[in-house]
Structures are given as structure tokens and as C-alpha cells.
Length: 207
Ligand SMILES: C[S@@+](CC[C@H](N)C(=O)[O-])C[C@H]1O[C@@H](n2cnc3c(N)ncnc32)[C@H](O)[C@@H]1O
Image: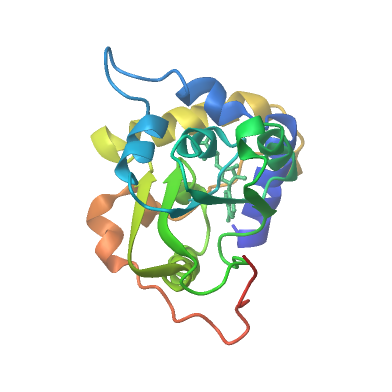
């Protein structure tokens, strides 16, 4: 399935269900434990310039905004999810950009950390995504993701289960394609990912 088909599907899906992930995962915690959002927030304590890749409706950014002095940015390909993020008062000063992870509109070395909650495993052309992250992250920066890979990929499976009822019975062009790159869901395959050098056409970006 082409990258374009996958991304068209995700845009259309999130146009109808722009907050589907937070509806499920914002409350998903073991007794006394943190949510995935809280765990990622805590991983980047002390990092000032933080990008949320595939930020959706902005819940994680809102948690991150609780730290003073933060410079936050969120990128997502869903116009509708971003419009929900923009409604969060805590994100009034945050750069929320409609962009593909494979081509980020940020300058080289712009961030001290990147968080990504339940998004990286949906992205096609993973090597290009990683190349873009390598470019926009400063030396020594941290990339920390929730990808639902632990325990056999159950979170990813839950996400795709959520998607299926929304597209079952849909016309052929609306049915759920295979999404993302399998390597992103299997930590043992991460070493096989090879970020390509950013192409000369990559944006030097704004921030
Ligand atoms: C499962 S949702 C997670 C949203 C949010 N991180 C959360 O956990 O609440 C995945 C998000 O990744 C975004 N996404 C998927 N592929 C993308 C890509 N190639 N570039 C940018 N965003 C992408 C989708 O639009 C969607 O908002």
C-alpha cells in the first residue's frame, strides 16, 4: 500500500474521529500507574525544546506545557486533530503544524527531545521519518516513543481494533489499509532501520 494511500486514510479517519486515541488511552493505566502520556512527559523532564510527532489533539503537549520555560511544537498530518489541539488554552503559544513526519518544517537541530505517542508505528517510509528526526534533533537530544510494542504489540492491536469498526462496511476506497512499517512495532527490528541522509530538498524550516 502506498504511503499516500495510507496517509489519505489516516487523514480521512481522523477527520471523523479526531480524538480517538485520547478517548481510549488517556485513561488507560494500571492501578496506581502512569498513562503512556504521563510516562513520556516524565521521560523528557529537563529538556527545553520538545517536539511531539503525530501530536493528534494535543493531550501530551498539554501535559508537557506544565513545565516552565518549555518551547513546544507539535506536528501532525490531521487538520482536524490539530484544530482540537489549538483549542487547548495551555497550547496557545505552541507551534502546531500540519506536516508529514517525512518532511518536517523545522530547522536542523531545533529540538532537545522528540516524544511520539502511538503514532510512529502508523507512519510509512520509516527510514525517511527517522532521517527527518535525526535532522531536527540537536546532538544529544532524546527520542522517546510509545509504540505499543511491549507485550506483543497489544496497544497497536487495540488501536487497529478501534479503527476496524469505523471502517467496516465502508466503500472499498475507505477500508483500512495496512498501516506503517512493521519494524516500528518490533524493538528487535529497530537496528535494521537506517535513516537516510536528509535530501537537499529537505526544508531548512522555520521555528
Ligand atoms: C493514534 S494517533 C495518536 C495521536 C496522539 N499522539 C495521541 O496519542 O493522542 C496517530 C497520529 O499520528 C498522526 N500521523 C500518522 N502518520 C503521520 C505522518 N506520517 N506524519 C504526521 N502525522 C502522522 C495521525 O494523524 C494521528 O494524529
